[in-house]
Image (cartoon, rainbow, N blue to C red):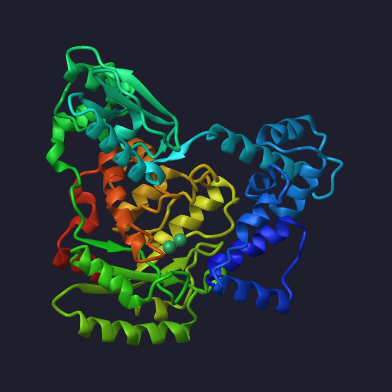
Length: 467
Ligand SMILES: [Zn+2]
Ligand SMILES: [Zn+2]
């Protein structure tokens, strides 16, 4: 029985109003699991409508969500209305301040209602297109719209065809658009965003870039060839030592099989106790493990050893400077206290960037796609300070983060031009594959490959880390 399964079950039990599992219940659960019984569907089906969704809102939790559902508040729309009307003020646990906070979150989530994350349907879309092409070999069939541009959030899929056809059943909305002649021009019109298509057709601009219109000037000045195409290595990945699912060696093997030249292991620091952050003793243990792996994989891959260190509230990093300097690199990340005001948050991040061991700023805004807005800070100051200290701004490829987003990068990168790193933040061997998606995001962000440190060859990266 995995931790993730157990966490899921406990969460569902809490939604049913239960506080915790007794040892005998835990035993029953585990023996049922070993017989192949998954209790989650049954627990889920027995929940009142809307409860699970409400409880998943940050700041709500099972107890308050149950109170709301009992009061007839079931959908996000119900909740928004109730929060606006002030009718929740008399309920336990809802103060003026928490209501304002919750209202912002609900509005944020409602903006994304009906959205689908690209990566969750990519395989299904590919299969669907392949089936259609097989059934209608004489037709031209191409996905267009946001999907063709690798947009991270979609409302559905648009498919351009030049004849009558039927679409197979799909788990997402599909719209078929009948093409007009000439095909190439029609295809161009349906792939680009409205903003892109205001200009003249330029077929040399790759589909994933055709977003805000800024791509035209970029391509004219630097050429498409300046953009990221592949990565030589990957930083930011967790192992079983903290909250990863794979062993150190499994992560290394996966990276070798992907043909990477180098990787950077980075488990969590002690402040991230929920993620089993490494104590100093466990740091020393991992150091020995790394030495063994370096010997075992010599000539196959270079292994950098790092840590994802929490940025504490005052901007200091976890661990003493002596411990921090043992690592090849430090990723400084914020994992708690997201609600500081803009100036305090900016000062907190700047202090972390100025620490001599910091090489990366991890998931810089803290946003979670469709769930949480990023925290507020002075972007310009943070990016220029990162550049000044040679710290790479992370483009986190984890599908629920994509942080910094390509939209934000387009706005802030041209004026600040920091180094960037496209990091998988992998929590499993498979998680490393996320860099494939990250490459597309970096291209959409219009960042020249020369600024992306993990597109550099090993020697260059090693020099940058060791300075
Ligand atoms: Zn993190
Ligand atoms: Zn991480």
